[in-house]
Length: 214
Image 1: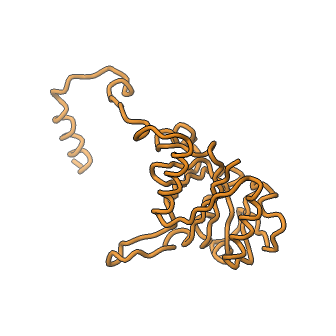
Image 2: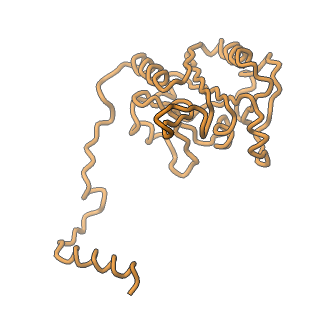
Image 3: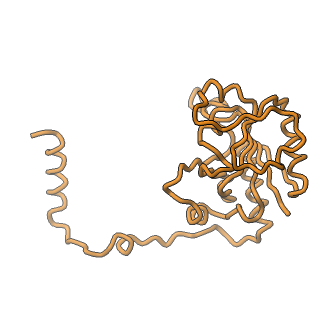
């Protein structure tokens, strides 16, 4: 008898006196979860997002749609970026007037090539205020998952208020679980070694989030 057979035998014996339940799983398990914690107005929800992003050491900027191009250009200049990776679905106006060399999101790009890119600019799928989390789903304005995991500097544009939700349950309702979801709460970091925080371990060392209002 294999170890697998012995374990399954123990499970069967443990369940021998359990009364069968024919109810569907969705009815058998009660999920009376709070959809959000407390009531907030839209501006308060956006403020909470900005606060929690900053707590995770993301750098938060706010601007209007008319100032977005200038804001992105300023961030790239301040960073000293010479190259920027741009997914195909990013609005061309976002980088108008910048002298930074644009790098295409190519399937054949190697990790070494992506590591030499100075910055990446993307949109997002949704942003969660209560957790300070940005979610990417591989849409055309976000590109392949690896382009936001290898370059050291990520500028992520969030449209306010339409892409901002209060809670994770609200975010899940907007997301397709079949898509390649990346959940980002601040720049990449770990404290595994002697409890010292080290940033840029398995993703960007610097995350800049631009909240774009009307």
